[in-house]
Structure formats: structure tokens, C-alpha cells
Length: 163
Image 1 (cartoon, rainbow, N blue to C red):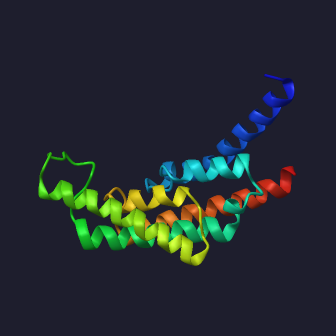
Image 2 (image 1 turned 180 degrees about the vertical axis):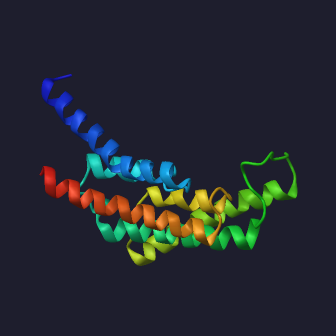
């Protein structure tokens, strides 16, 4: 590994940490789920490919919004009340409903992002977070969208300050 590679990697790693730290503080102070798995890939893309089309604000916010909406529709239509974090039983109807909800959510998100030109791969993780009952309420969907918006604003500020 060259010295230049180490410097680039250190900058990218620091950027991911900086982008997620503010939301981590919000989680700590509020106890609300402002950090969730799909924010990691979004922060990674912002840190490693900041000018890529998938990092455009419209795609990031739009993709996650489509993912939240699709996840809410799928979950409340197909698997409302079933939660993946609960003990799942092989062959049980609830397990089938939850699996179907995840599949439907991913399909709806894919078509939604294609139709609206808001392709952002991490949003497919967001839709599973919602569609599998991990954060399935309208309030939690709103928190997801606020957190993604904060991340996008942070990315814009960090980009202006350090580039």
C-alpha cells in the first residue's frame, strides 16, 4: 500500500465517521433510531464516490423515500404485526408473510426508483428495514427520511469545507 493510498483511505474513513457521528449523537441523546443499516452504505458512497450519479441529492433522498414508502405498503399490506426480530418458526404463516413482505418491498422499491430515476442501491436496504418490520411505523419512516436528509446536508457541508 502506498502512502498516497493510505492518505486517501484515511480521508474516506474519516469522512464516513464524520457523516455518521452527528446522527450517533442524536441517537444517544434521543433514544430514537436515527442510525440504521442502510445509512452505512450511503455514507460509504458519499465518502468514496462523492460525485457519482448515485450520490446526487435527488437520488439519495428520493431512493430512500421510495424505499420507505414501498416498505410501509408491503409490510402493512402483507405482514402487519409480524416482526423479524421475534422468534420465527419454520413453516409458520407469519414467517411466510414476513418473507413475502420483504420480497414485495424490494420489488416495489426497484420499480419505484426506476420510474422516478432515483436509483440509490442503499435504499433497497431501507425498504427491507421497513418491510421486515424492523422500523415499520409511519413515525419511524419519518425518522429514516430525516436521518437521510441530515446525512445529505452533512455531505454537502463536508464537501464544501474539505474540497
